[in-house]
Image (cartoon, rainbow, N blue to C red; front, side):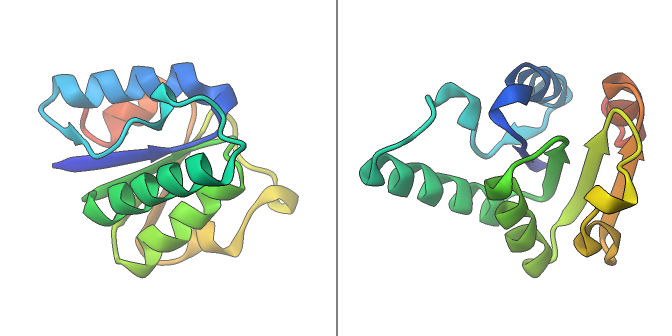
Length: 125
């Protein structure tokens, strides 16, 4: 099974941790954006954007680790539009004022708590 993890740069360590656990269970990572530096030039933004778009298109499971930025939410939209299996993880329940309606559509599973609890809920740990 192929996976992609969307999140913010502040969550790089958690993304890497979850990725390592998934890979150890035989999952394939479609793109590891944590290896990038924050892009600021149009050429870099284009290249990374294309790689991330392709990674979402090629994954079976889309995971968004909160907090997540605007690019992650664009990726969420792509994943939903393509009918991917979507998991949204947050250490704490997301306040209704911070929620998106798209967190509640069919095909989205929201899980709160410790990261290992989340990984066990999706059958990894």
